[in-house]
Length: 229
Ligand code: SF4
Image 1 (cartoon, rainbow, N blue to C red):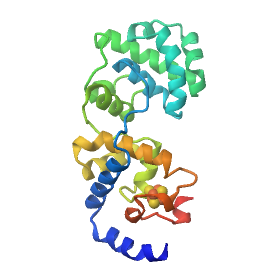
Image 2 (cartoon, rainbow, N blue to C red):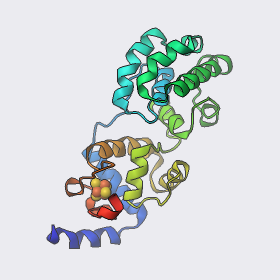
Image 3 (cartoon, helix red, strand yellow):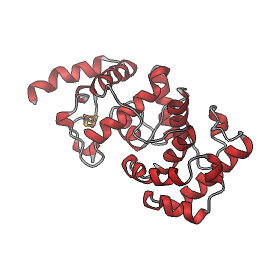
Image 4 (cartoon, protein in one colour):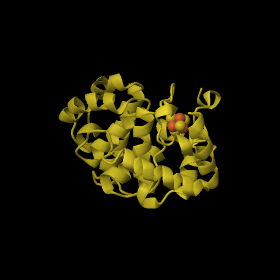
């Protein structure tokens, strides 16, 4: 390890923040070439619902819940007219189920009444939907419509972007603004997806495996217990 540290530190410090972000992006593309959204869905409405359910919950857990949910309520109209108690029951295991069910139903009612039953493809309109903030809107725009309107900042993107020294903020909106300045727009969403993969596999919240991390030479927090604790 000692022999590796010297050239590594020089490399990181020789790069600007933007150069470092681009190098991290390149490495993530090589590490996770086939990274895609982990949520299962068939339509934009289903992606919206799955993303709302993924708050404070793993995608894996959401994917266990959505088959029964979408079999019973496949579209905006059926979700808008569902019995709230039944909806709550179907999403219960994702946590915060009362709030999530209420928001899903309210969002679907608005999609039906104001957007002709089609999930809007513009950020400003998506943000009008109950329970939809920029994170959810970015996911829907990128994966349902192929529009890179912003950078999705979830718990992994937030943690890793801080470790990697690409932002000093903790507020997701400020983090997103910092990342949008550093990364090319076509890569905004694939950055988030790949960083999430890296967060799950290597840079885990409780115990980052810096020794196995392919980004360590670019990471100011590599092997720093105080920063990682
Ligand atoms: S070096 Fe450590 S802290 Fe930095 S990204 Fe890798 S695992 Fe995370």
